[in-house]
Amino acid sequence: MKLFIVALDEPIYYYPFFKTLFESYAEKISGFAILTYTPKWQKDGLIFKRILRAGILGLLVYGLKNLFKRIGITAGLALGLLDKKRYSVIGLAESFNIATEIINDVNHPDFVNRIKAEKIDVLIFQGYQKLGPAILEAPAWGCLNRHSGPLPKYRGSFAIFWGMY
Image (cartoon, rainbow, N blue to C red; front, side, top):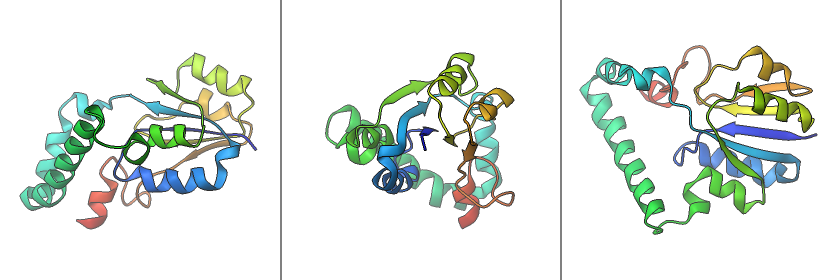
């Protein structure tokens, strides 16, 4: 079985899942792509509406804590003060000798054709993009969409927050 993973390089929540996955299945993972796609809600400022809906307490407890944590991790990685293998999913993949790359669109024809050409069995996806028909049909067995919370109750990008709220 050949696996390919597409995800965001999220150091707080995704890291433990991918560490466990890599430890168990590294030899079956043929590649790992970091998705740099910016979702529409971030471009349009919808994030502020979502924060307002969560209330000031939700913002203070969840938002600021994680904002400062992300800023600290990003700055630490940029300055070389933190180990990329511990605070970056792509760094973790590289430490398991898994080929890595950065992509902007999981539905791009070049990426879809590569998944077909490499005869990938399963594509594991965790990101903000909607998977189109071409990428859904590209892997032999199909795609697995990993979400941070039980669906449909915690759908959307703040699944962990809504679970705590």
